[in-house]
Length: 95
Image 1 (cartoon, one colour):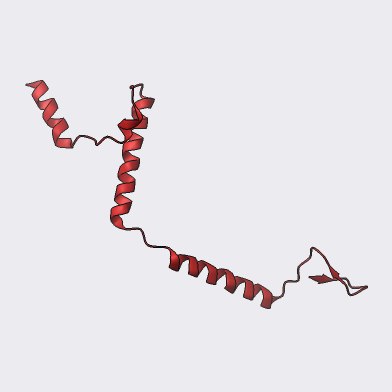
Image 2 (tube, helix red, strand yellow; image 1 turned 60 degrees about the horizontal axis):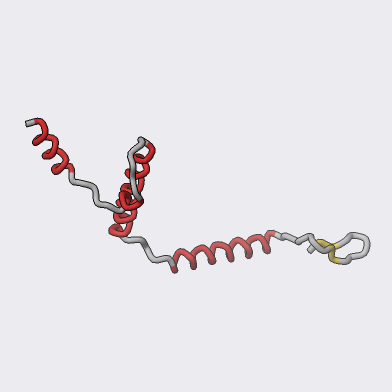
């Protein structure tokens, strides 16, 4: 709080910030962040891979819709064919 020079009364709405109070506030913020980071469980590599696989499938379905193909919401959930199976289907069509 800030004091009025004439009356010595504390003025509402003003905060007094000394280097010591700033340091205390900063250390409290850092301690809070450290506590939050300690409580967070690390994300496993397997969970990250599953998330990105789901996003990739969703993006594939969205790109099909943008290109004018008729799609359903299940298209984003459906497993994509393997590269080898796609190549084999084109090889049999050419023969």
